[in-house]
Image 1 (cartoon, rainbow, N blue to C red):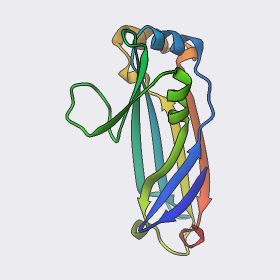
Image 2: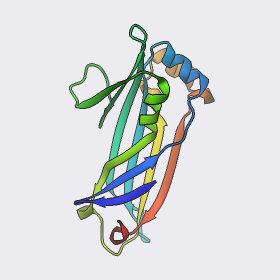
Image 3: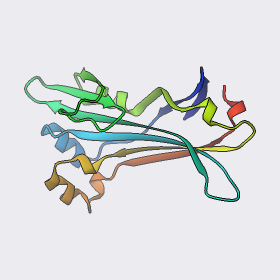
Image 4: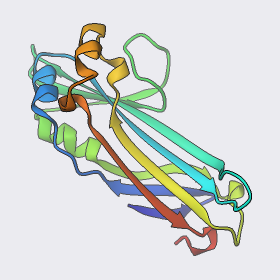
Length: 167
């Protein structure tokens, strides 16, 4: 995980290491869409009260196998990605599941906060979370997935930073 200064903002570059559980792979091969969520938050540390959130960003990635053409489609957007909403999203297709997962695992140039929101000389804490969004699965799978560890996929990391030390 690396944080850097880019123009008037702070950008994240990271590599998320995970393996898809067999139950998730099975659901994907049956054509069910699976949504991954990346969340980043920046907090200003305060000794006298709870830390103040000064920046946050979120990305949703929807991965689905299209059996008729035997291709994987990855759709990424800033909000929940579904086929019917009018939000802006980027879609790519891949020949293999490994190619699609390679893109999901790699985060680069993602703007998570503005430099104007960060105070100079004050310690900040950065938190990054990557998870499988079970709430967007079809209802029957949500009920079955609640107690199963096969559907629990979550990675998190935290880092302290000083705004003036950013590259």
